[in-house]
Length: 379
Image (tube, rainbow, N blue to C red; front, side, top):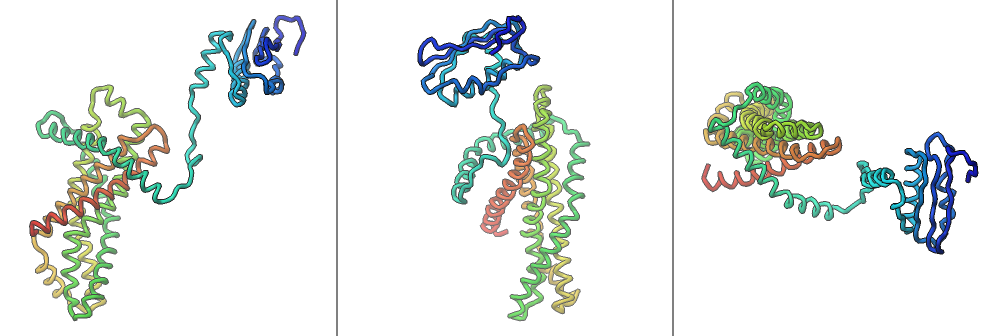
């Protein structure tokens, strides 16, 4: 320890008023421009008998160097179970130490996660889903109220935003819908032909592909495609707005985020997914026609006539209804997860992933309910 009488030098002395207490006296100048001691020098003197640490101060100046020294000492004592009394420290020092201790430790993605079994993770996911059910119902109620405000003229949509969303979820999705629908129609035709060939009824491939694509598979595949393409995009966009505090700004200005951000997206998907469903059915039927006429020697006009006779108006109605419901499920899931997003980049990624999972789950549930309902109604 320095023994210089210069007032600018730092001084540190230790004493033991009793065997279990160590008192540290700081005096002089404790600043970055000084050659200060390391806390390790003092920590080595804290024997196993010491259970309490106190301070006295007579400082002429101090800065962050003094805070860093004390912080290391306090953490060392906490690890040894030594009680530290800070009452004798300057008020500013105590305040800054308290602020430093209040900052939570940063959690880095992927670290500290224990590997758990499938049943454990499935149970946690189920519990979280049911815990989130009240919030999902509240969000659904806000959307219903927003639709009511729109119908009564109490809110006015920005039509430019709505048409932009329509273009984004409709025409720009045609390519991927075309590819998937063509391949699904092709697979359906091959599967049907393999079974129908046993009874010499390959012509009924037309019935299988037409009804299957228009009534069920077209809407289902379109819903899943839109869930992966558009639902995740909705969650990511709204989640990024949450991170940037843009949604908080809307609330501060008295603008409902549901009216301004969520409603146009839901309307856009409810309008465009039924049309994409019809388009998907048409592409699937073209795939069935191509396979039937080139591979299974079915005439072009025979296939066309069989398709026309198999399709009824109710099949198109069922497909359109399912498409609208699936579109609403995707928009609801994407917007819900986006509005629930946290304030970090990792949270945005988790929101996008959760939006796709929730969309597919709701599509599957609604598909089962609608299929049973239409069967019971004879449609």
